[in-house]
Length: 437
Image (cartoon, rainbow, N blue to C red):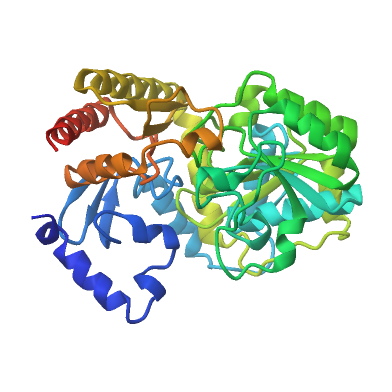
């Protein structure tokens, strides 16, 4: 039955493998259930595949669709502004207006540059930090994802929990083959949420560390919130040692709040990366920062370029997204629905006898299975039962609930209580069926 349900996608995937490497254009798409799927359209909180299957979508295209699929104001803004031209390779008025609006909203956004995606913006921030401090390395944390480029392509995964090595001196496993041997020498790696380890590392290596980069919430693995005082401690250490504090807000930006997680936690970094939700699915990102740091770009000591930066459709999408979020202010509702989903998941797991760990904050939720305690770092995430999670996610998918395979759920401004109740009913059905096996 499962095979028949996804047959058109299976046929298209076989055809795609003749022209697309692996049949896909991003590695993550391979890992859908039961294989990479082809989608036909999306509307609001729902998405449809070519076989006609409908899903309540809690992936939101890996995060960007803060206003859901095909939001009419976003699509109209893109259409109208694109009719004036696609790309000028020069400045235009809406680009300026978008920058002024972000400057008004985001604490660290005294100045900014726009890019196409988070990976590129992260590397720009590193370049700025190196130029201003005269130091060459950066400090990052296990399990944090900052793009797929060479110098951050370590410590995202590991062959086994044991392969991580000791906490004080982790072993950074490569995520991919083909990395240059010297890339591993560009950074220091530590477990997250352990300020004492950061203090010890900086005491011995601050002379070579230009930046500390962190997700303010560890969204990509476990959706873990920072321990009290952790982010503030990073801020104080960076001030002490002339190190740039960089927040990767690719996921949290515009999702935790219109002013970012930095406002939610009350910690202002030196530079921040915004992407994904900023453009409602159109390719735009921003490196925003304090003027003293961004002056490295203003002065052209640091070169930042890109032919496709601030193309008309992407800027129009971002401007429309900000306008809708400002006007409708959906965050209280998103947090309320997130709390409802987390509470429902926990209740159903207890009722059905499953060892589910539910974590997250606001409209970002993570589900995993383990007899252990709550998650506080990547090493805890590695103890989760991947096989059981796979059963759970695939069961939900077959029942019309689409969740990211790592156990991540995202809520948008257009999700409703009915969507949450639908998902929870499906969760109970799937967990009960798992008991029968």
